[in-house]
Amino acid sequence: MTTPILQADDAGIARAASLLAAGEVVAIPTETVYGLAGSARDPQAVARIYAAKGRPGFNPLIVHVADTGAAARIGVLEGDARRLADAFWPGALTLVVPLRNDAGIASLVTAGLPTVGIRVPAHPVAQAVLRALGQPVAAPSANASGRISPTTAAHVLDANGGLDGRIAAVVDGGASPVGLESTIVGWRDGRATLLRPGGVPSEAIEALIGPLAPAHALAAPDAPGQLGSHYAPAAPLRLEVLAPERGETFIGFGPSRPGTLTLSATGDPVEAAARLFDILRQADRLGRPIAVAPIPDGGLGAAINDRLRRAAAPR
Ligand code: TXA
Ligand code: MG
Image (cartoon, rainbow, N blue to C red; front, side):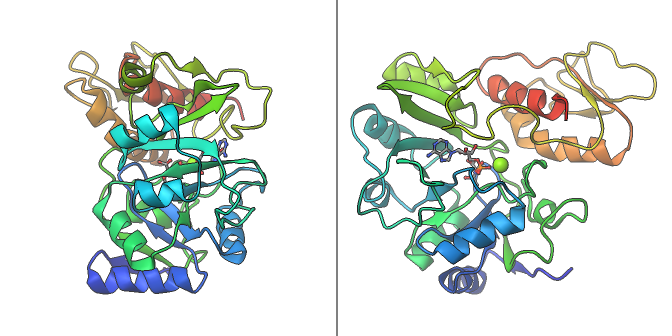
């Protein structure tokens, strides 16, 4: 192992902040998944993020800041965007809003788009790093492009497709409690649109600002990476399976479908979200085709099913 793991104590956080200030990339825990952070004002640091992930250059990154005030200096937070920020930040929500002219964000972060994705993470370690650095950081999920998102420091460095040796450090903040990436909301022709289901259920957002338009079948390039194969384990995956076939690893859900592994023995979608990526990794390691029990679509179920469909997509 050549990438050091930093403890989430004062010394580790100070070290992470000084590496970031020097333009290095560092994986940090957030409540959704681990992010691969680099200073959002430093084009070289942002380029290092893309290089470490092997990610296509046109996929824009989320900017993470410590509070709503810092967010409002980067993007235009008005109307429903402001309402959502006030209700859900800090938390598992990303808002795609117009980029301010004076934002001072490297253009590589937004891939040249006139909009910017911004999030205020709630995780105390992410908060501590952002406050110690005093600058916004760009951070995609800390996995190689197309691989399963990491929810622990060990996942980030995983020998199988991880970033060991490719990044300056990872801060160990334990398992990410939400376990799924943030929900992404943007605006198209003034209509609030669900660009990606995630850690904040869309029902909670709609309760505040009314119906969200779906982002299905996008012709527009403003949600790259939203379609097709993603979050992929190496093994083939079947979904909505009531009973597995011989030779399959069955990922169960709920008391009536226990499985070889289970997302939640009690059928709790919050627990299932928190365990999803770890269970996919565990199943993949068994080296057999994977079958997954049905997950009801309400609340976090919608985001879980979105990730499962991508993992099962042809590639
Ligand atoms: O929970 C999360 O969102 C994690 C943590 C680390 O914050 N981050 C994450 O980042 O999942 P990433 O890069 O894996 O996914 C971000 C998504 C991408 O699909 C990207 O296309 C979209 O956000 N995005 C970012 N900026 C955008 C913009 N200006 N317009 C449209 N989509 C944008
Ligand atoms: Mg990702």
